[in-house]
Length: 525
Ligand code: KIV
Ligand code: ZN
Image (cartoon, rainbow, N blue to C red):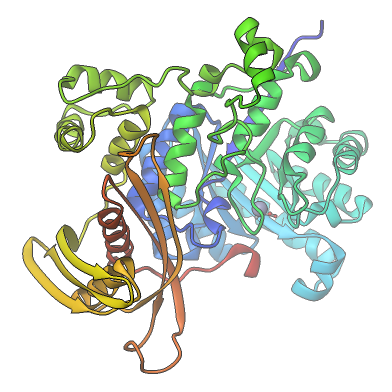
C-alpha cells in the first residue's frame, strides 16, 4: 500500500464565509471561531481582508496576535496599499501568510481589469514580490483560474513561483468547474510548470453547481496539497467547499485517497454548531456530516439492520464527528459537575466563571422543564460564548391577545442597566406586537427579513430557538419606502416561544445599536 500524504486544510470561514449575505461577524465572534478552528486542527486560518474595513483589520490583527498554533492569513488585492495593510495586520502573528489575488481569466481581464495578459502577469509578479518583501509565506490566487486559458494559467503560476509564492491557489471562483476538469487543471500544472515543486498547489472551489466538494477531491487526487474550505460550506453565493464534507470524505475513503489531514474530526459538530449560531445560517437537517438527520435512521428496515450490525447502514461513526450517540438527560437535581461533564462531552470547554453563569441558567431552565437534553446544554453554552455587549437586555413582557384584534404588549427591558418599559396596542398578532413594542422602546426602525422557530430538543416542553434577520431601515416608520442598509441577525432561546422571539429581536437590535463599518468586497473590488 502507498504511504498516505497529509494535505493542509485552509479555512476561510472568517473571510469567504463571512461574504455570505447576512453572515457578518463582530470581533468577539471572529476570535471565538478562530479559537474553535485551532481546536479543530486547521493548518491555515484566513482571518479576513484587512483593507476592507477597520473592523476587518482589527479582527485580522487580533487573531494574528491570539493564534500561534496555526498559520494566520490575510487577503490582499494585487496592489501596494492592500499588501501593506495586510502585513500591518499580520506582522505580529507567529505564522503569518499574505494571500494576494488577481483575476486571470479572459472575461475578467477584458471587462473587469481592462488589462492584457502581459499586464496581468507583471502585476501578479509585482504583488508577490512586495508580499515576499514582508513575509516568507505568500499565497497567490489567479482569481477565476478555472475559466482561465490553461497556457496562460501555466505562465502565471510559473512566474509567481519565481517571484516567491510558496502556495499557488487555483480558485473556481464562480463554481463553474467539473471534477474531471479540475483534475486536468491540477495535473497540467504539475506536468507543465517547471518550478511547480517549489510551491504547494491549493484549490478553492465554490458551490454554484453543487460540485465544490467533488471538485476539491478531484484536485487533491491530482496532487493538490491544500484545500480551501469553510465550516458548513458557507460563503459567497452558494458557498464554498464544506470543510466537514471534504475532511470526512478523505477520512472515510482513506482506502481510496490515501490522504490524511490534521483535523480533529470529533470537533466537527461543535464547530459547525458554533458557526451556525454565530452567523445565523442554520444547517439544513439533511446536510452531510453535521445535519441533524445525518445519522438518524428512520426506515424500519434500516433500524433493524443497524441493531444487527451498525455497518449495514452506517459508513461513519457519529462519535467520530463529535455527535454523541446517547442523549443523556439532566434534571434539576443534577449538579455543577454533571453539567460541566456534559458540556465538555459536547465539545464546550468552559472556564469556571463561564460554568457559573451556565449553571445559573441551567437551574432556571430546570425549573421550567423536567428533562434537560444535550441540545439544551449546547444552547446554554452557546448563549454564553456568543454573548455580545448589550445595550438592551430583555427583562419580561405581559400580553393580552385575541383573534381579530391587535394585541396589547407591555415590554420591560434594561437599557444600559436602567429599567425601561413600554406599552403598545398594535400588530397582527403577539409576535408582531412584541416586535413593534421593541421598535417603539428602542427607537430603532427595522424590517424583518426572516423569522424562524425551531425546537432545540424533543417533547412538548422543548425550548424554542428563534432566529431573526432584520434589515435596518432609514427614516421613521411610515415616512416613505424603507432603504435597506444592512442585515442584522439575532437568536433567542426559551421554553416560551414569545420570550425567545423577543430575545432574538432584541439581540438583532443590539447589533444595529452597535453599528457597523462599511467594507470593500473582494469580488466587487
Ligand atoms: O473565489 C475566489 O476566487 C476567492 C479568491 C479571493 C481566492 O475567494
Ligand atoms: Zn472564494
